[in-house]
Length: 421
Image (cartoon, rainbow, N blue to C red; front, side):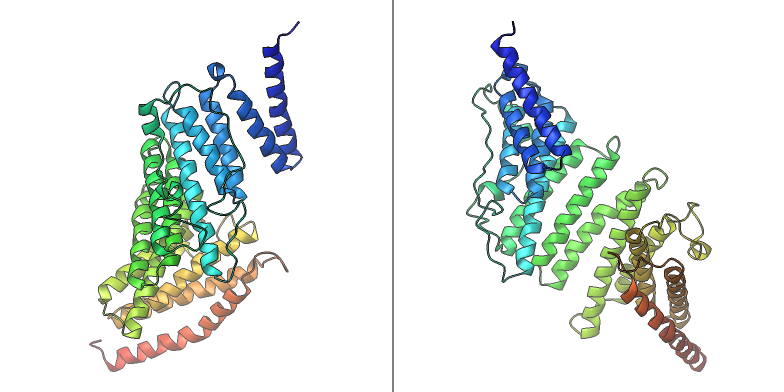
């Protein structure tokens, strides 16, 4: 006859199976509830507790609560995971990194949630479980665990001063200083993750952590009104992403290379547009060399992005950019590619150059890109009434096909009347 310990284990297993069943039935809330109950019952037998497995499951449960904006419950899961990690043997670098990474994702989610209220100042400040100051509804019975190891606690501790210090960040009406506090916590966590998961050995994870760090800087831009400060945040994104993009092999990391090149190019473009607007408005004097360098950064990375859609790597950009791109199966991917080509054409047409011949060459290249975009968009039309469209952008491209030739002609005439220009 089976004893009570066996019955208890069967009951715990049953809760775990129920969590899986409800997940397959797309009843996520019920699945999360049974998962939490399973984790709690596993804590009753601290001697046989699988430390790494328990932490992994708690991190996953935290991610579910985070997707529902239940920040307090997400935090409760991570606090419990830290407590479990502080007893028993030391965790390997990978599970340690994933736990600290989960804290970073929590900070980033809070930052993005605050951005929503920053953009919609008339929205009410929530007072439910999605509030930044809500109390958790999820709890774990950690009383039977052995005492903390201070060394292990120090190795697992993730920066969260802005979370524990409720007075510093209250509700969702954040000031720039409050947003910076959360951003610093997220960036500190991600720096630790990148150290634990180096590029050599954990390439995919390391790149994803870098991309998360750039999302922090991108989110923080919403609290910045000064153009120079916004450009500094863009520069930090470039400094993080471009060296990695240069190191990765497109043959092994095709998708990651495309994402990185597009994001780096967008950052260069945004910096170039901001600086050029300052010059044109008379707000600031900026050297032509600096403007050209920013434009060249955008052109270089948009070109690399476009070349990644060709079947032959290391193709000659002069001829390859007119070839038919590969892998544009769905409308989402098609729009992403066309937006990259459109940004490339636009940057070429706006790049300053004191040499009129070079300026004409840039405009001609821009015109060639606009022609290519129009031809490709008409050859591969978007689904009528679909989620993604290129109608407005295509109209702009067609307009540029009418404007650029006359602009090129004027430069040609100016060159003939002033050969020294």
